[in-house]
Image 1 (cartoon, rainbow, N blue to C red):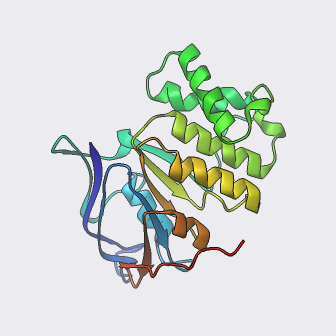
Image 2 (image 1 turned 180 degrees about the horizontal axis):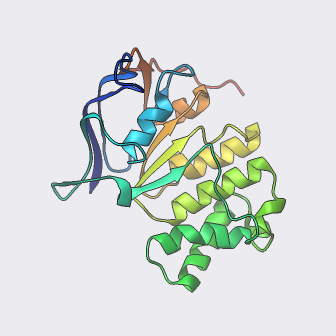
Length: 220
């Protein structure tokens, strides 16, 4: 069992500036999906970076708790970032296999896992293509598949559907949120449909997380 625990998190961009995060507390349980919403500049991406250990914690606590032991989150987190980081001269399957390799899988097992996740995100037929020839939306799906292939228990995603059309968004959400195989997912998003598909939606306002009112179901 793995849970993410955040207590009274505060962060400033400069020592004398007002806090962009001002006492954020959050618990994410095993297998839970949580959306974080809010306007541009409200600190959502900063919060995500703190949750995953990309930024040092200035004040407060961020920990992944496993078997009642609190540890830093770095070794437990898989990322889906807006700034895409892929190896353009390697194949799609090789890029996704990096997820399994980072988790200690043998190369053959990592490639097999990669192809399974590529099928899940609708890119199995592109597995042997250089990733550099893919569209932006296809590369985003590669990044999502790589994160899930790592089998790490916590996925942190920053606007994962921002470059995807409506049909592909539906497929990706089914994989990332509904088919994540017990992983916890925290997703920063502006998309009400993404938030609606999560177990909980929170809005970052004035440096604090508030429960978001449920959005009405999408009209077909």
